[in-house]
Length: 120
Image (cartoon, rainbow, N blue to C red; front, side, top):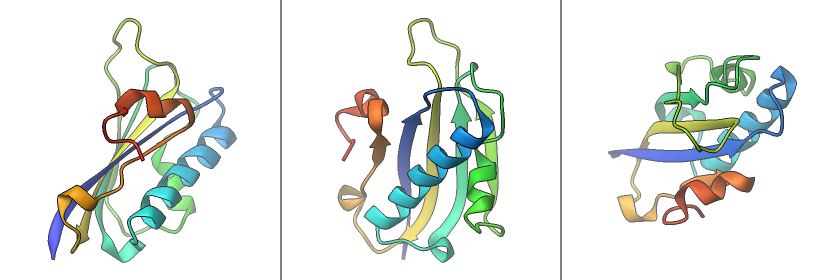
């Protein structure tokens, strides 16, 4: 079994805790489903949020999905001029037999523009 990294991002419509929870949960669910993963396959998850998001911790959505024994951490994304606003990014470390080239990285909605090279 190999350790793989799964990337993902979503752009929020507004800085609202309920909206963040809903969108981040949808992103995590899609990341797991598209890669055939379960919570038991997760090693850890890093979340970043752009500086304009401060209504809640993105990791709260993971806890809401029942990922209570997975190490999670949140950080603020770099404040780069002209960067897409209201974005939550995810980097999940997982155990998987898939080769790196078969990992599905998930960029929902407008966030797909961030990584057209790997978004699926």
